[in-house]
Amino acid sequence: MLWKNTSTHFGHISILIHWLVAAAVYGMFALGLWMVSLGYYDDWYHKAPNLHKSIGITLFAVMIFRLVWRFISPPPKPLNSYSALVRISAVVVHLMLYAVLFALFITGYLISTANGKPIEVFSLISVPAILAGYGEQADLAGDIHLYLAWSIVILSILHGLAALKHHVVDRDITLKRMLGHRID
Image (cartoon, rainbow, N blue to C red; front, side):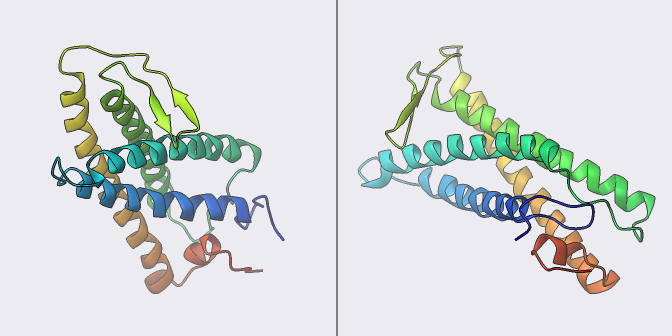
């Protein structure tokens, strides 16, 4: 079993993290849209935000691990068939995905801790409120959080469409590498 990345293949840890984060991001997006539509007397009015916060903090930890893992196990080299534009675009989109995800975590933290209370993560640990009570912190962070959430969805759709383009039009192994197929 290939755990670490090689110069030509993604390892199972990178693949697992990639798809886990993708599923979590879409799940969090759906949960976020659903929970803001709940009425005060709905059973999930308080449960959904706590779940959203707990998953968000967990996803933040996974993304920190993912960044560390990129240094421990660098991703495979780009294919020789990639043009300079494709190589640059891939780097820019990946950097944007990382930047928007971390900005989402920061704004989510600012929303959740605006009242000065810590975030309870699955009732196991508490993440303290460091910045709190700065005027309209929750409202401003909430607006930014919403725009960032839509941005990550749009960027990830473009990312997925690019992978499909590589698979269907270019007929290269880009998508197969992230699906864990052995191509030698």
